[in-house]
Image: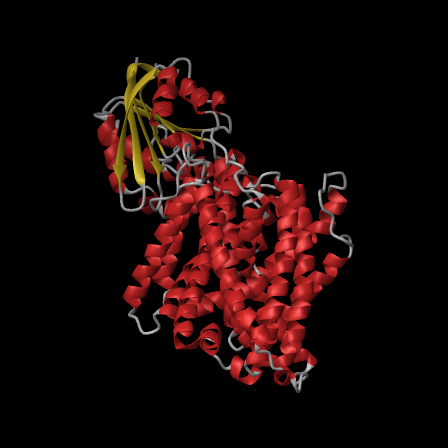
Length: 626
């Protein structure tokens, strides 16, 4: 099976890390900080820089232990287990796709403030398609793109810092302390997004040469360089433009460009800022599919998304899903991207709290795991850092209008992951399927015509052919939805032998079909205990609807079922795939050759017929026993 390739050198991953972490905040947040705290915002930047460097060290230790594509998902899996790591991975995935969609729309809004919504959406979709196509085509191409954007971002800032040094006016910092301590603390929250992005960089650890040693170095060095650039940019910006003027600027880099280079310079810097924002989007587009890849490998996402393209060595199915998801968000959220971006800050801070806590937890749980970098005071300081981050969330909640609504939306998106987690666990775990089906028996009966449409039943029975007087074995009868139709079709003289692994389903079906003496219902969690009876002839038809994909050992189960079918008897199976166009069923259901082979090994010759519906694809398997 193809694997991800280690193609990223230290210089490459360092530049990509800088591009991932610096993002877009540096272009807007210095002015936000100056508006909130005046020249004293420099204190907030210094405090945030120190805090961020220590957080980077925490990420560095974790990356040195687990240089894998899952990044923060992998760290949390080692510390907290499957459920918590899924919720963290799910939240990161949601936040990442919102970031992609909203930043690309925001960038177009910055460049074309007066353009129509349709034009902005079309341009945004074009960039999403282009970036995902580059991500699809391989890491070398992706790295070249991200490094180019990193140079654009760094060049843009240096082009403003250097002339700012020569034009520096110290009087702009007098008076210096114009804000209270609480205001400075709130300012730290306002500018915190500048340093978000360590998680994006860690997703690429598995494709980095000597990742366990190189990734920690890139995270720390990259953060230190960003801190120095941010401090220099804030000092030189306020040094050439009074804090009150700088803070009121809607497009601060454009105004600085005009100040240093004239009207033409302002236009150039408007384009450069746009390119830098787009570059931040590109970083997420390239990195985020590695998270889905890691979750799919651990069976916390459909296994198909762990597939690596044989030629390009990229998680191409995860990239395709990301393209669809972020494109939908662009269309749906084009008018509300500001709200979406606001909710990212508390969500990401909360994610960082969980990640940082894994450092002391893993010091306790895995003391002997090799660490190529060890964060100082790793058993105690992370708790203090988490307390600071939680305090920032509290400050945001108490100082921001509409914070409750934004936080409610954020929590709703996180809580949405809980039922999805249990659905995925059912997807792979037969005992879990049985346990959940025990609880769902009555809802299945109530919604049987929706969950098993009449059209599908009719098609299944059409392939089965005339059933009058015949004996039918139904595998996976559920609550008896199809059984009732079969019971009618076999009269007079026929019999239906219906089997299900879930006891409660059979009990519901018995009540449902108690008046039909020619229907024989059976239950046992293990199929090999099921027998029709030694005195009875073998059945004429083996039929099943939506039960094939639940088989943990399909070849063994099919052979046992085939033993109850007489020679020349018919077999008709139905299952489903490609729900909502992108969500697959178990991987082997999609494999035409594998399905044909396992039925053939059970002495059943079959033809596979696929039919596309609005929200899924039906797979009919029709044939007979040799």
